[in-house]
Length: 331
Image 1 (tube, rainbow, N blue to C red):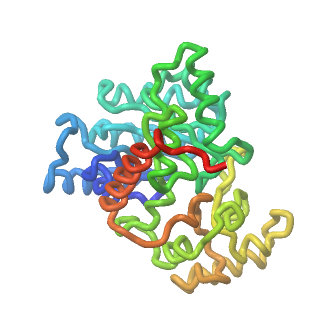
Image 2 (image 1 turned 120 degrees about the vertical axis):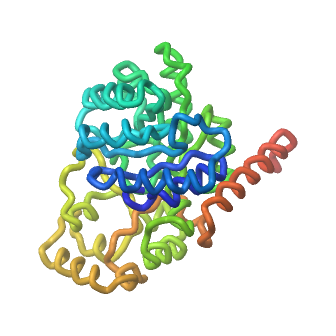
């Protein structure tokens, strides 16, 4: 949710009882501006239950590109409740980030680290001792491991491996392919303490996203077929810094179809640049612009306020859990 989840969405989710994150991504030069806006929004309408010494939202960083010094200054100044670290060139790089973030707020800001494999979970647990590990399955939209397991198998295997290695007390948050209460209930049953959702909030009133992008999300169905994890969309946008093992999942469009064997031609780049000038039409049915989204995109049917999404998911979880003990197979 880089540059899509900004202060309005992050604060709205936190006000509704979750924890919302500002997606700072790789470019943190204006992070203080976004944090200042979040601070203003929370001052105008205080969020109950948060530590008075922290700003009740989180900040997400893409570590291969974000500037640690700039990020540390912003975190020290505004003291968000959490930081989310993802996509270093190597996991060892996260040690410096973890130490800097903890030092910046004297441990007030909690460290969330996203992983996509059991091996990475064990490595970051050993190196960084994070407060939360976010386990991202392969159904997730946006960037993640090109080779990985879905959350149904990845989450319990990760939980077992961490427990066996002595890290069983680190809470796990599940991500990837979850947009409603059924998915949340399933992840809780698999051992998660919570769930992170990105694709669902693309269709929220507070998301900083073009209407054409939202329309593409609402139009998409059968997400396992209509989305793809690829490097094509990064190549078209001139983004080259991602670690080799990471690709981005987005809705299949004409740009992807024109990229033969994943190779982006100059003609394709020119057509993409022209589509940028078309505004919302660039995401039309035969459009060319990137719309990152996960495989659960087909379950999203309308744009709603973020608070309504959180409330609906929470109630849906209760409903699913209340009937699960009585549910029997019809086979």
